[in-house]
Image (cartoon, rainbow, N blue to C red; front, top):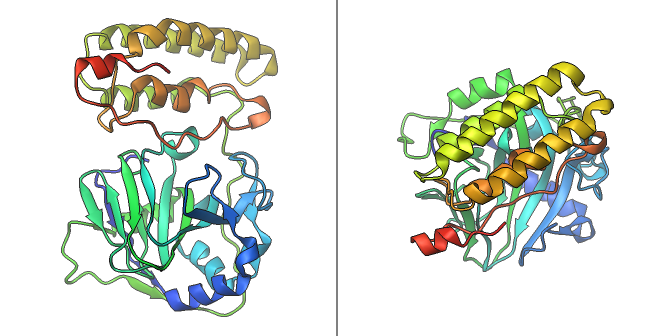
Length: 336
């Protein structure tokens, strides 16, 4: 999700030692390799589709995994943020490893913010986002702008473990964000509330059930395109791409009024999207975005692959793209 600043610290603190003890008690066998195979990265699902830790889907009812049900204080962290929770996990980064520079441009993350609660970390672990770099200390609670280029570097010997919660938020959550501290604001005089362990009672918290539309509505599509064009760098082809996109939106509104999400309209939606992709591919090849990724690549992740889904299944994840290199020759060499 695009934010106004790279990092915002939320006004909550947690007992990191207590969280680490719960994670430790789960054992090593529950940890899994990172889905994209990034070296030194591993993960432990806590909220997953159907509560199945082995299910990497972005769609379907999200439910707690058995591992989360064994961790009452971790469960309490989820309940304390006042949000409707999506796919969430523990993320572990081994010593002298990194999360490489990227943008979370996939459909699932465009409208979701990532809440980070450091459980095990060191003062030298560096989280970079845009032009800012911070250390998230143990027990703090942060969100950051996933639309900007970001990376994490662990230059210490010990592994870093963060709780990472994906969420669209909710009224209580965004009120809390409004009370947060941008990373560049003074710390003096700002004091987050300590959420102390409250025992073994597992209080319910809100979970996603609707996450991937069968057919993207024209209003959602227009919102995604508004972001893409607001972030586009100046380019001679921009006007042509905007013209083609306006035609797509006109056609999509007509189809929506005729079919809505009725499966009878799928072939019409698909033909319209296929035609748009074929037409826009050429003029969009040299378009770049301020966050250093290709316009066409971001469009395909946010709209092209996500506009029509089988039984609500999500498109493949898009963790990022190669940064755009300076120079016209490099801009012209952007096949996708």
